[in-house]
Length: 443
Image (cartoon, rainbow, N blue to C red):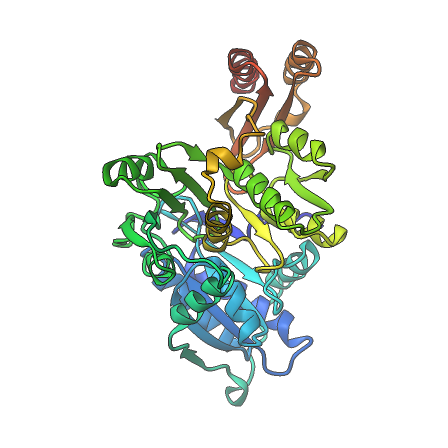
């Protein structure tokens, strides 16, 4: 069965337009509640959210839907997506729910779910939910209705968890760090984590008003972080996205490091500490330079589909620990069950503190191949996959690149976009080839 609502990261869209409407979200929670009650008599669900103004409305709709299906709800308030994953596991809840559209603007929102183990749920589970969405609701009796309450100090519990992943042998004392929370879910939590580990923290993007999440700040707009690091003479800059599951890092020169480089740094740090790293999972978008550098170290590298859930699936299948995406979704499964921007940042900083080296020194072996990514907006019913003109353009570009680069064209899982990516040793060639295919798509 093809999923109609769930994308690569839950259900997402523009607020007020299907499916991100209160009536649908209530039906969704009711359907999820019915799925949970197939295996549990009285399930408990945790609900966290980011700072979008629409979060209040969707939170109420979720609460009603779950309660009507006989499911208890625990409200966490604004907390990062990975905090919901952690607290779901720590509280022995049946399910974790996040209200967030991650790096999207405030007009969008979404719903995503975590299992009782703090992991993303399977495609099969999502299909089961979608099947029940087509059925009439089955209201429980008044005596069986669910209740709702708030969890005191959800943020404080998560702060302590993040700090526990940073070695007790090290401190961030003497380090000045700019922390950019994208006016999102980690706006209170992120500065405290680094401050409590000893750093002198300058906070930006930590003043949400419901409308400014990801607006000119955060991991998707790192220019604000670069400017702040230079202005304050900081040692490092840490940028998260709206729900704090992705990361970008800036060093004291203003140089920006993406997820591919940070993943390689985390792997190298483990090897330097004589830990065994049998393999690493990237995605179809991971820079070839990382793959080449890892293979030089004798480490197996495989690519999953784009999306941190697919990276996680590949890691679990291989029983490996480390993986991630260039966007900054990084996984260290011995630290957390899901991608976590704060914990990943701490792993990177710990490597720098432990070695006394800068990030540029730690990444001296990796020179990224230029990548050009062009997003082409398409009509929802546009059948671009079967275009003979596009197929011919791809064939011509691949012949031109030969073995010095690669092409990837894929649909976005969250927006009506086709992403055209070309990677080559020469930037001019990558740009020219990407524009050629993008122009063909627009036609």
